[in-house]
Length: 304
Image (cartoon, rainbow, N blue to C red; front, side, top):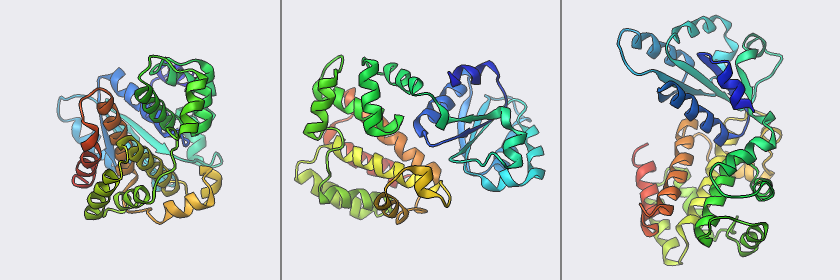
């Protein structure tokens, strides 16, 4: 498995490429845990280098710096020397795509981990580490959802709805037919999601109340928010060949492009993680479902 290779050859600099967002986050968390380090997201590699150099002067916890889509660093070979700042810390550069013909790709080949080439079996294992499901069920939901993050989100939703310890293929088929997985959203849900993702706080609160009046379940709203935020993140970080690099439909790309740039890639990643965290809190009884979406708005929109 790729994770085993990653830890068998530890380094202070990693390049994670590909579209499998959730798996990247899992690897980052495991690297930080293995090093007993804290994780910190910054905008550029050079900013991370400056922070790492300053930190040398103080005795403190190691840091894993995470930088997303710093294309200027990739094309400036003179800037690569700054990586010597990471004597005690770690830098992880996240890219959606990387042209193998570039000098950067050839120079740092041993540090590059391609998440698009991850075997399906590894994604199945990640699902089974969190849920009691067979290979067949895991592969089925992965095929339906298209990526690990959405798969884990939908599996959690189905387990919670059915209140079972294990899921069968019949359970998944029933969940799809009933709309529990990918339930088509009502107009108010679309409008709420749009308001949230364009930074319209007042509109988000108002439309949240409207959805609640119509009896929309919080998990249904959260599922749509997750999907749309993920689409925006993919389009915003994919460069010019959007359709080829994301696999999204023309309509999905058009809808996502309208909201690109409102939030940074880091803020969109924070939103995806927040949605997952809220769903987990609902499942564990730590957060009431009737206030979950209001909590999302406050936590995300008022703290950005």
